Length: 105
Image (cartoon, rainbow, N blue to C red; front, side, top):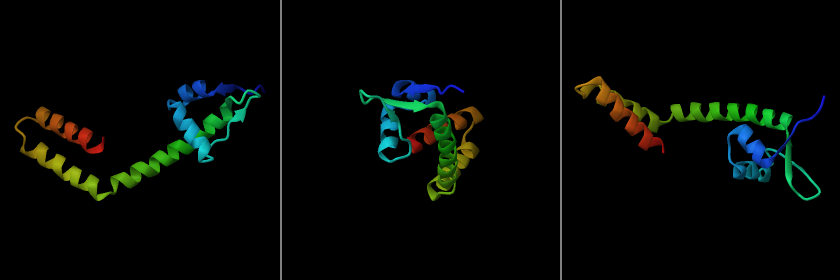
């Protein structure tokens, strides 16, 4: 079976992340690129697939931790209050979405 190689640009597009993220992951030893004689980074498809699997489990742990935080509980209560007290459901949803956007950005 032939190994498929990705440059850092193609790897970043494949994973939908920035090149800088791949460089950071290299510094933290989460992925080790192969280097060409001219010192360019190359990744195998297997490395990128494994990285996606690790990323999904990391994302699940992050979301699980966030959902249990007191900040999220307060936000949930605020949104429930807005939905109950607004005159129309549509405007309440819009306000709730705006709060979520500004709360987590």
